[in-house]
Picture 1 (cartoon, chains in turn yellow, orange):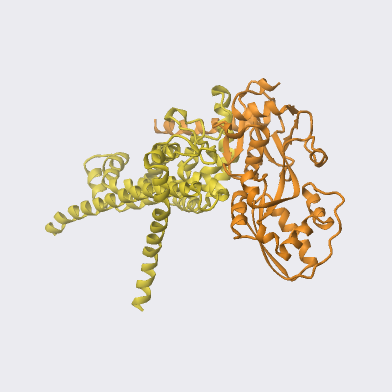
Picture 2 (cartoon, chains in turn cyan, purple):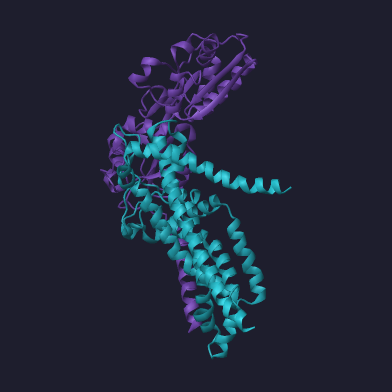
Length: 299
Length: 283
């Protein structure tokens, strides 16, 4: 019977290994053919021109911008929501909010995309279109707002769990010393749960970097190199670059290879985000152990 | 103090929604001075390939054009954006958008048939010499060009031969592989349905992948018949025999609120290359 469990565990490791092998075996040679620097730092993406260019820098920046925007909008709301739910929320209200947050996590991304396309994009166009002479609402901002909403359940749920895990003694101690409820929560509980909350943010980043469908529907998908202040214009992310062009690409062509190489860059991105998560998590475990030790010595 | 602070974002949100909801349907006016919103298909799409070639845009498509991955997305974007312009296959036109005339010619099956509407492209099947000698391949292609086959071409697309001869069942059996352009695919699916009523023992497998894939696979003999929604290049015709089975128009579309009815080919080109950026530039 143990063998069955072992095999089940092995499957996931095997899947990751196979994906790694496939990605790197077919992506890295294409990257080499294009030239590593030309690929990573090239500002032009014109795969079907007579002299094709495969520069992925606009997409790398695009991914960074929409992710940064999503963090800027989603993280403060998410953390405040988690603080409210963990420490301030009346029971009846909690029974309403918690399922709503869980439902949010379950909504398919294409539905978010539809919402963005029909509501957010026209809204942004109406608010800023005339003033800034924009052609449309498809923009980095639209993608950021949408992703900011989409990462909320991830951030809220993990941050809430971590806030609840903070020992009650810390809160009681703070209140005993004369702190108000808010002060105790924000100055004692939140700092104590810091690494857990950071982990929530990092997982949110992972979700934002990897999102494809919803972003594709609202981001405009231009392969132009954007600067941060051009957030009202459209951009393409790494994920959308792959999904938009995969359908028509000729098998075995350099264009196909360049798309897989885009996948390699994306994979490295996610790898970095996940290692950051592991580092934060192990940091949390260390600190919890340190905190537990003196307490054990006293009793 | 806390109450005031919490009311502030709430009222801001309400204001934003009110502003957003009131304007789109409300005034309905079309402001000529606004920037043209370009929407285009992705690199490698057959529709895009045909459009940029026939309008002379070629590789100069404006980098600022928003890219949508499929026809339906293009249609939705143009429906939602008052100042949008884009292009779709004539067979995919919907009521939510407005197709405009080019050089005074409206895109209809009639104007495409007589060649006066210029932005049109052939649906092509291509075979290599070895496959062309195959009895079954030859029979299927003769069906595509027969009265029954052309009946299908005429249903949503345009016939290439009005007076094609009737097809007689050949009684052959076997398997055919057809692959390539996803624009031709729906036409091919209908063709195969009719063909199978004549020759039920022939099993025809259709796969997509795009025009480029179809052409290269037909060359290598991976598929028996390749499908393409663009003309073959001189290089490609050296090793493949193309046959036009239907014609399809590419319509230039704008939002329904846009008063414009006609553009010249030159204006279409200038809009999509970014040389003209405002609707007032084209009247």
